[in-house]
Length: 324
Image 1: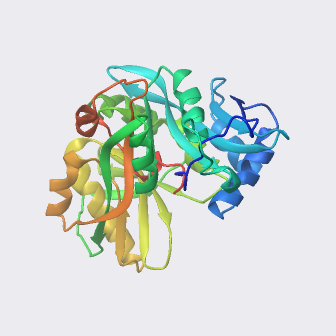
Image 2: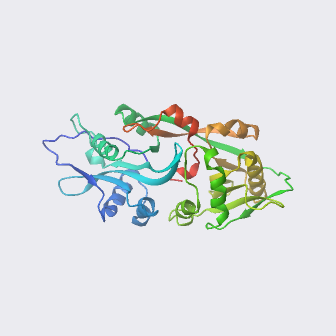
Image 3: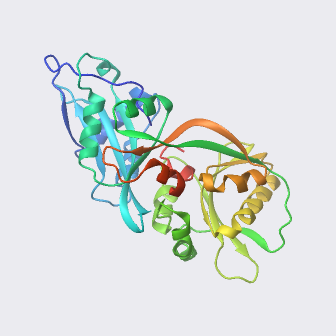
């Protein structure tokens, strides 16, 4: 989530310290989250997000005041990624926040600037994030990142499709066909989170926020799956397609089977995110595009790619965020 403001420190009157997260800080971090965003994040949710994949190199930096109270936070969720022809540990910047009492004090150096600098200087890896417009403008002003992608909600209204050779089957999160499909398609997807069973189990099955379902696309007389989709029921009218991968030639079949299933269940529409290289195909299926005020940022303090390159090669879905 983006920061609703930033602070410039007066070093003569404020004793602010910056450091890496320590065990137990998550209690105060989640308290700050509620104060800043007016929403709840439990300690369990924080630990799931930053530590749930078992990485030892999670990145979470805090600012504390003279009383030791946490007044700022910048998190980096570690993610195994396919990036520039190799598997790396990349990071999604998240939960950037500053206590309201510490915003806007006069000086040239700001709390936001300092905590961002600490985060990036210790992070020589690919970093991206999801930002609102205010956070985007602030980060660009300070030179930490630039806009790479403007995210659209893509809506397709449901109807009945007759696809006799294809069907959707509910899948278990540990199904070996998930890894088999990933190994077949990841090079064609572009830069992407490694969407294997380990990722799906962490991101969806063990998610303490919400409940998701996993479906695989099958074709009669053929072993294996041609694609999978993670779905979330958000209300009586719509499904969100949180995540998906597929053999490229079967995208339309996957979506048509989902649309038909949603129609049978009384849903009026499905909503999804997919990279721009799929947009013409989605428009041909009746997809309507709506700006949602969310931007994917390319973090350039330690620059790992050009933003034009990122727009072309980065594969993303709703599941890349930490807030859906």
